[in-house]
Length: 82
Image 1 (cartoon, rainbow, N blue to C red):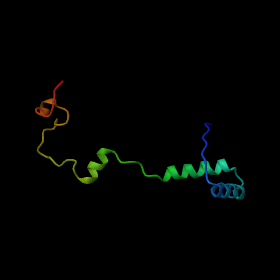
Image 2 (tube, helix red, strand yellow):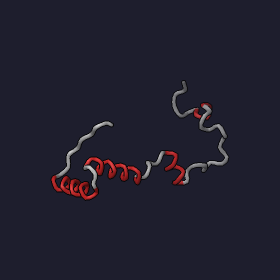
Image 3 (cartoon, one colour):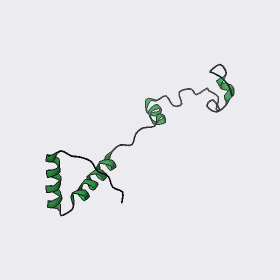
């Protein structure tokens, strides 16, 4: 198991130790479980695609060429071509 350390204020340390003792586990076990719970509840970050889809800007141009995003010919005038 990898090791990590961090500092907490004295009051938080006392609460952690008291809670761990009450539950019959080590403070490290309790801190690991709290961290797991926090990360499990956290919402995943949206991708740029997710944001665009949520904003309703995906599929706005229905009459565009089907290869608009992949065909370099459609990029004429938008910068240098390789």
